[in-house]
Image (cartoon, rainbow, N blue to C red; front, side, top):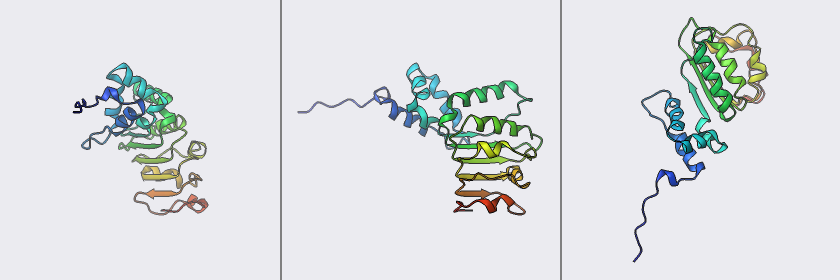
Length: 193
């Protein structure tokens, strides 16, 4: 007779499988699953090492920042966010930046700082009510690899002055708009609007 085999424990998983489990951790009732993922490395030394290793890249592939912080208003939180992106930004492929305050145009500085540390972002969503500062020159260099762009609220205002849209763009979703941005004409690869 065959002996019954004990069920595998989470500690028996390879680093790659453990990282995939981490990446799937979220609570459907919470808008920002990153809160849960960011606490996983605090459980034990191995989990911390897995989350920081190349195997942990899937954990940080999709990042949602519910409220972009204004650097001047909360320098500690801004510094913490930039520090996190300095460590994990290379793994980020999908980035959602939000800000529901109309009086927070400086929150766009957070967007610039974060995108500079996440060069591999392919999907970007900006859900921001505040109008971005004029002449978002950072967009031209930091958004080159973006293939999917979703703009709501004030995010669309960034392109009304003729600012360039990412040249590799395949899909563009726009919130409520009065007219299409002039930069749209230069998108040869765009397949979905």
